[in-house]
Length: 225
Figure (cartoon, rainbow, N blue to C red):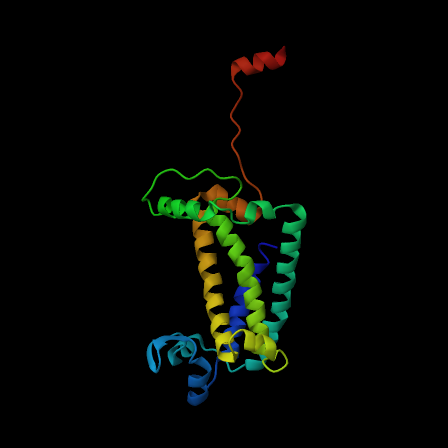
């Protein structure tokens, strides 16, 4: 379940780029006006300028993009539901849900990562920062599905689209949730790599290699007895 999300998420991002690409300047400006940083009519930065798609040689395949996007959406949704059910039924949720001390621990962990503090706080399976991050991912995944449905069916699911603040707001939320997932992925992989090659290998393969020290002569004599 953990690794299924990796190819699925990036396939959905790529197909999302295919959906919102357009070769018409007017349509381009309309389709991408929510994907910018600015205030009012002033735009400081636009995420999808013309040269972006020109460099990628993105074809005008909106229908193909929609097909990929909604096919992998079902895999993303079913995998997420299966993971939540497993976490609940197995009791793993006890290690994931934030506690009262999680925010304080998360700040301490961040200071340690920034080399501004020494010594990690006591933890069980996950520390406070991990509890907050992993729980947030669950809500982010649900948010991706709800905002995507509001964009896909703004008329049939008008109640959902209205609840999210309208079509443009749903698109804006969907876009920034995607960036949140990318940010989580980058930090997640970086933290695992910083913890050591053995930790990274265990995340990929599910197996952890541990050194076994050779028994002492005294221990061998006791075993003979």
